[in-house]
Length: 467
Image (cartoon, rainbow, N blue to C red):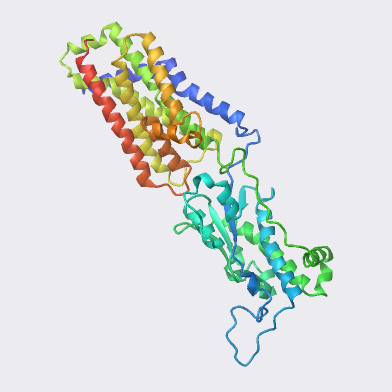
């Protein structure tokens, strides 16, 4: 009960202290807003939303295009008494292969077009080049398997795979199914009858927006190809059919590749990086506030008077430490809520995993604050030692910039700081399509270990120190 009374009193004083509000809330929000402004991602200033990352794989069996039986429906039952349709002449087969290749190119170009928006599409090979630093091993040679591997490794959000029989199915598709796609087998963007697969991982449903976007590009293209194969029907679309006819005499189109963002890497929301970074840094500024609070009460003689009362030293220690832990939790919650409400920050697919990192990080910051408070003897020492330590730890751990930008040796060194473990945990929750709960709890465990060491040393120093 004594500890709770001390906690309530100190908490009330902290809430009323304007310096506390400025240090823990106003400063980090100002830093976050300034970084968003300088990177062009501040809402209302033309900042782009995070793009959905799509890999488009061309696994079409080009050797089968124009071969014997190519014009027969792919799902037709065997008919021994009927001969398969003859193979195409070489020039005609080559033209159909070009049209098949150009269909995939047109879908890629369409997904990256401004009118679709919010999508970034590339081939498996180009994604492998862009994501080279994150790939962790080579991709399979088969385009379809490579696309699935990119999704499974969490490097892209969705795969669109044109299967081996795509063009044969597209060539023999029934006109009613194609043009009546709102009710037929291709309804609601279902392209499975055309051997087009949308893959989002074993446990996730394909995005409806991506499915409709792909269908909105594939079906019109196949409709034009179907119409233009009929010379009489082609008169209805002379411009489009002239362009398709020109494909027969031209080399296949180059696959359009998206332009990597400045500095390479994956398109991401800048606030997914800077909100956690500055949150962690300013959580540990709690060290300064705790040190100054303990110094102030030491100078007033409050701690000395408390030690002469029947209140146990453990209760005094809990009562003086718990308010700062609660303030730290409130600070983190406000910063993340503000990041989401004002800056469009995403909390990841499993936001509940933020909780163990938040709780453990605040515990580590409070423990370090207690230890520092028992080591310093003056305001000058707080300014010289505590502030410098907090900034140094924030710098080497990756609070000022993404940890991926740090040299490997510095990343390894930073694991000796609680900041780094907090940032790794936040990155796992916020920037990974499928967060690994085990990794998150590993980071939370490391933070709890830091907290335990800091608190134990701080309590020992607090008990030995004359106040």
